Length: 326
Image 1: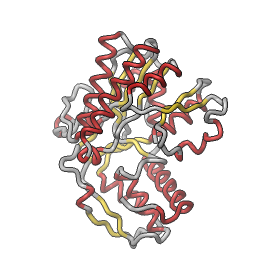
Image 2 (image 1 turned 120 degrees about the horizontal axis):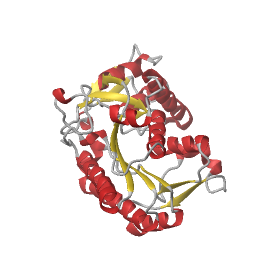
Image 3 (image 1 turned 30 degrees about the vertical axis):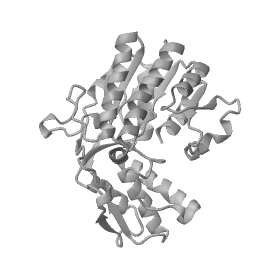
Image 4 (image 1 turned 45 degrees about the vertical axis):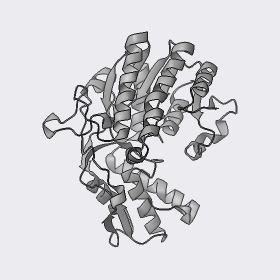
C-alpha cells in the first residue's frame, strides 16, 4: 500500500528517477495507475530482490546507487507474526541489516528512511499517553519485537558508520489499497461484499476495544518525503501519526454508517481474529516531527475511511466472488 502511494507522490512532486524493489512473485495491482511507466524509460523502474536474500539486495543497491532510500518493506502483519515469528524476525531485522549493509558498501552518502512502527511501544500505560519518542518499548507481538530490532538497527548504522539514517514510528495509517489482513480494511471489504450480495450481512471482527489514532496513507507518504528532504538528521527518530483517536469499534461503526445495508449488518467476534496480546492504546505525540518539518495531517478521518470503502467496492464489483472473507 504505502510504496504505491509514495511512488505516485514522488512522480507528481519531484523530477527524481524512482526505483522500486519487488519479489518475482509480487502482485503489482497497487501500481496499476503507473503501470505504463514502469521500465518504459519514464522515470520509474522495478528491480527484483528479496529481503531474505543478501545477494539480491546487494545487486539491487549496487545497480540503483540511490540518493534517497525509503525502506518500507517488511512482514507487516502482526497477527501473522504469531504463526511465523522466525520468518518475521528474519525479514524485518536481518532484512534491514542486509539493506543498510548494502547501502554502506554501494551508496554510503544516501539519505535513508527506515520505517519502524508504533507497535514497538506495545502495551503502554494510560499515564504515558500520548506516546512520545522516549516512551519505553513493550512490544506485544513478534512483529513488534522485530520492529524494535529494525528501529535499533537503523540508529546503529547512523551512529557506527556515519550514515544518514532516520527512523520513523508511524502510527495507524490506512486508505485505498490497505491489505485486507488489517482490521479496518477487512471491515470495508466485508461491507462491500455484503452490498454486492456475495456474503450474508455479517461482519466478522476481532478486538474492537483497542484505541487507535488514524492517519491517511497519503498524508503518511508526504511526511516521509519531508523527512528525507527537510534538514535530514543522521540518527534521528520520530513518531508520526494522525489526530483522530477512536476505538476499533468506532472505526467499524463509521464504515457501516456509509453502507446502503447499514440497517441489516450484524457484527460477530471471530476468535481467529484475536491476538494473544494486543497493543491497545496507540495515541501518538508527534510534536517532535511537526517541529522539525512543519508536517501535519490534511485528509479528514471520514474521507480516509470512505475512500477505503470505495476502493473495496470497486475491487469487489470488478473481481467478483473470488474474494474470500478473512
